Length: 509
Image (cartoon, rainbow, N blue to C red; front, side, top):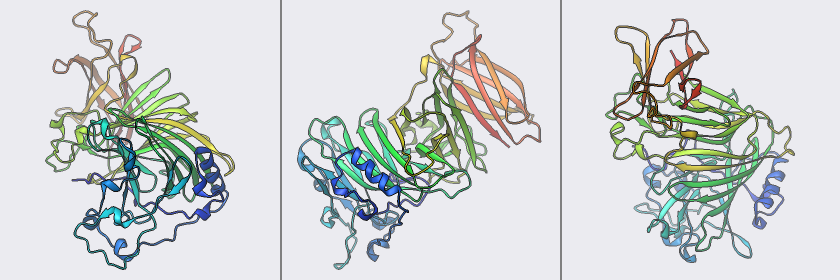
């Protein structure tokens, strides 16, 4: 089963950036405006790859050794300030070998947080007496005030490149977010810029949220980030970023996050596994101002799948785990039915562009193979031209469709009996238009549209699902041999009025 610290499909190492990379002394950073100056100065100079190395003992740690190293809870940053937020750090080693620099913004000054070996217990590891200490930690986690859930509660983790994750008071870790995505697709090698420095605002008892700053640095981009995080049944992050491109890139992803989908109710063939489904997320959700509200079930095949949803009126998007039934997963350890959804709410800088979904083939559940992001059409032309974005991340159980639309709850498919025609069966939850004011035998209309290749809809109908109280839609497809890809769109309607989410699916031979 997966470790709770599984991150996305890349080498997950944070790099150290020397203070010489920026002219502004990093210890003088007191707020976001100071950090913006640092990022702008760095963008004007060539990228410098890190050169620092760990001591051979820590460099050689494997998974079993690294997991024995535990941060001592009473050594947490801000632990002596009462019932408030605290920060615990991760030790470099295993896949997380390159340190990150941390600062605390205290009332009167900013101070660096040095690595301290005394803040860890090493289990059965025999650390050599002369082992050289790392120059910094590898990452960190934030604990909420104990009064939130009457116990220590870790709700947010930053570790590896620009990756971070969060949980709610009711749901565990799943989806990974990251600061930026560079050349995820498009032919150029993908880059993984790093959060190299962090600044924590010293919290006080009674503070509702926890605030931090982060400096992003990579071969093609620098950036200043501000995070304000509020844990709860929905954990909310307010994120502000000013970005500078050192050089042109093929693709830039804003508010990117990644997840895992190995197989689900719609997958054929299924792996030989005792579990009916294995995934962190089962669909992409998109809302566009004025409509539509889209649900795109996830799926994987032998080849990379990419879907683009263009708009200049984005209201939000996110990956979700809508299936909350344990019986559909049967996994007592990974607990996939309790993974959070993440919803991106644009605030600033989301103009004309597209939501991009990348689905990579996978043969197991260890690595994330699903990526979703906002891809802006226009990018800065020079390092001197800043790109500013603001958005909120909501880590939650569900983001409900707007206006009482019928929500997609499951997607199933297979062959029609004694035929090579394809049958699709989609279940919808009851919406605002539930038929209670209609004649007893009323059912919604179904609209199915094909694009991207040749195919024919042979049959389509809707019936009441007496088991769920919602609606079940059916349609059959005749797909000629020459067709390798089809984009399918389906909606439920009451006359001309759309009463459901727009279900969209990519069929591949």
